Length: 72
Image 1 (cartoon, rainbow, N blue to C red):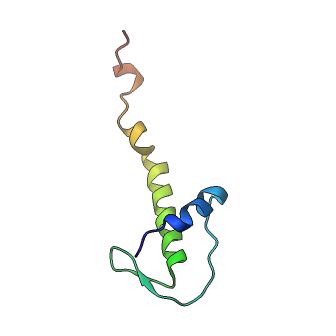
Image 2: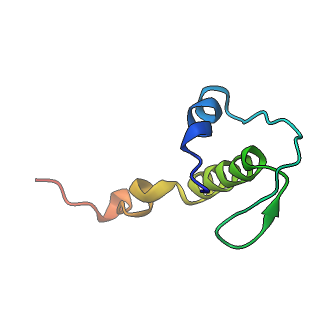
């Protein structure tokens, strides 16, 4: 199973995920092979953080510019 929930709290606490280099190959949903599950999850979390930072997240993306907001 490729669920990364077991690593998420470790990642959020430090801002990165420290993994061992054990060889226990696993494939992600796209079929890409990773050395082990921890390294796969580290890459997944890094991509999530990059997407969130670049787009401003869903809340920011859906907000209207100040000039277009109406106040009541």
